[in-house]
Length: 198
Image (cartoon, rainbow, N blue to C red; front, side, top):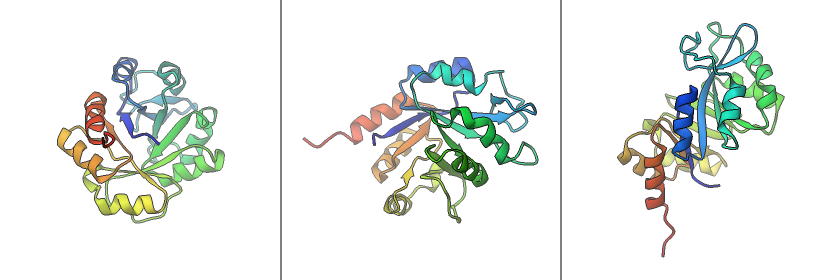
């Protein structure tokens, strides 16, 4: 599988289009769930930063580019995981789902076994997961973590990596991709560090 350059937080139409222009291999955005069951693109749990763009509109704007949907689920601040999984049903064959909440991933897996899942974490992960990709905060990534994940068939795609030196370190550690606000920079480093030997 090619190295994934995930453009981080394409959360409004203008930013989404700018992210697409940098030619990432995937586009990440955040979604929350309204009281009437609509999936709005927003980072804050209370949807206070929503611009009105729905997940359906974001899916249409992103075209064929793989879409990575971070589900912003944190009951009781938000609806429960099962409600998110239900609302996501029309999209689950065309997106990847990522979340800090394992319950979301479990409910999505029940709904569609083919949807790629990533567990996000900002502290060392101490539990089992149904995900097939680990999404650690980039400071947590070590060679040991990458090797352990690969030994069990899991991918490692850390977030959010904007420093070129850290990008280079992570690529050299063998991660499978990274989420970044600077996809063009990541492209250049991947081309340089993963160039096939002559």
